[in-house]
Picture 1 (spheres, one colour):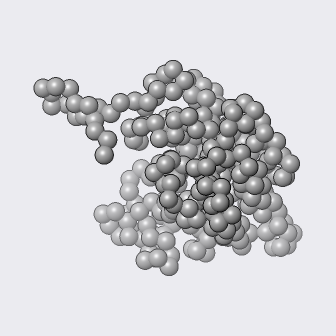
Picture 2: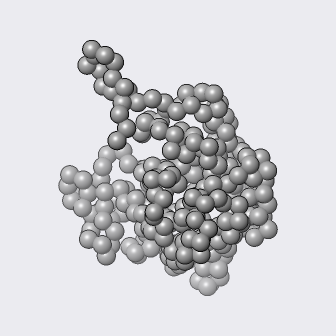
Picture 3: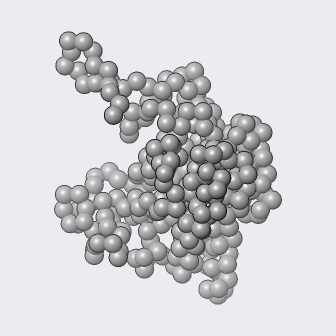
Length: 277
């Protein structure tokens, strides 16, 4: 357990030291930083912009340098880069699109050329394509826009990752609730299967592969199976869909999870996913 610093003869609460990165002091509003990712380089597939922003900030506070790619809104990626740079943190845009295998290879090559390594990959969120004429075409286009990017990036980073590297995929708890479309449900379920199978393939390299499955809505499970903190139909105040994902990813990216691979971590906002109550 890390011990805070309490001024002698004072009743003030213990103060935790801040980490130093890029020559500036950084604080996290959610938890005291402890340098868990100091010296690491993280590549974020930012298809889900809000989630990528949350994770990038948590990683930067813990000392990681950040690479961004595949943002649905490239201006959002530029703004995130500017805001992190203004706080003395390192952030680069390694590529805009990850819809093809060769594009993903180039993204990784650019990141390694600029920052010298890639220790962590986080695939943040999937994107359902617009409805097609028929359901099969819709599923195919959704896979191309989302699941294939996960696969291509995992395959591209693995040769560069050192022992102790970490790959983190994001999925959704929607798939078991009937709230997702057939295309989204198929893509999200494939991500879970891909995570677990890729964990076996990466184990010989000493690379961990896990996933976080988050709720798309704070009250997603409330009507039937929510066992929320304090009351059956209550959701902890102030929680947004990305809440808790950043901290979970810090754990999965750090040495704290060195013996965990092939697992799916539920970020369920206080609820119990269907089939697990």
